[in-house]
Length: 111
Image 1 (cartoon, rainbow, N blue to C red):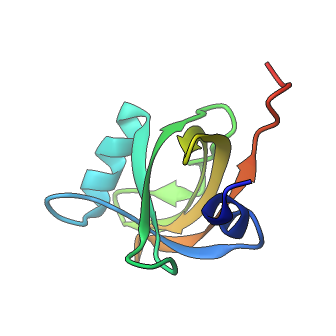
Image 2 (cartoon, rainbow, N blue to C red):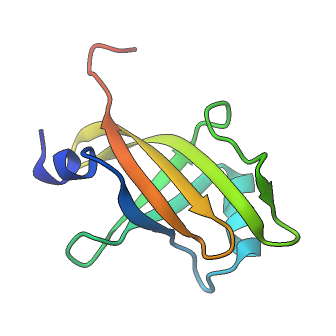
């Protein structure tokens, strides 16, 4: 297993929503509505930013109040990192657009 994938698969790590041009809740909501978000693991050298296509059935936005910018979102989505298929699981607080997350390797035998 790739070293970065292995490290991010062990325990939870600090993350933030990576948004451009400005880091706002409305920009984050637009990304969620498109079903694709950028999540940055901040405790790697220079940070590791991942583009995650959301699994809408596994994700949970019910605890989020986007108008008052409070609550949390639970995001789940698959991607490929360094040629390895992984699932990204992230919990992000709307107030700070930061939270905790980790990766889970996806077994190659699973369809």
